[in-house]
Image (cartoon, rainbow, N blue to C red; front, side, top):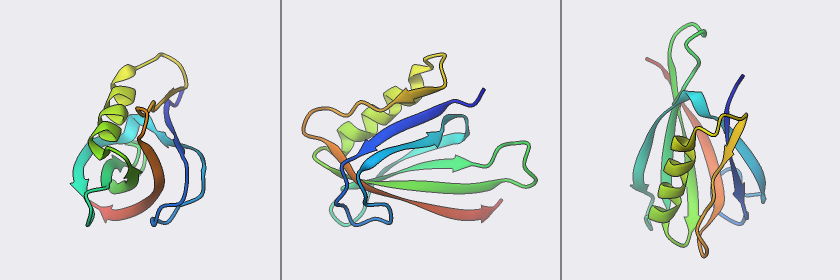
Amino acid sequence: MKEYLTFDSVGGGSLNVSEAGKYLLQLEDIIALDGLIGGGGDIFSIWSKTPSSSPGSTCCYYNFQVSGSTKAAQDAFLKAIEAKPGGRSTHVLLPSGTSITSWSFANEGIY
């Protein structure tokens, strides 16, 4: 059974997906959570890979633009990743005053 990480976006940011909604990432393929990036330090990244059953290894990353505390958002993602709830998904619970405004995806190619 595939496990997923779900998160909510309030929309309004400047990255590719700026619509409000509930989104998901496949949890088992996450390999790293990257530090603060972006001009204002309001963006962080989650790195992922293709499943091991796929030919070749492809790395990609998701950028998340945040209003409020980017560090608090990173911590919330880490807690959700580490939770291992035993179900199909785990949800990112952001602290009050922090929200995801947009996100994007980029494929880095085969390694």
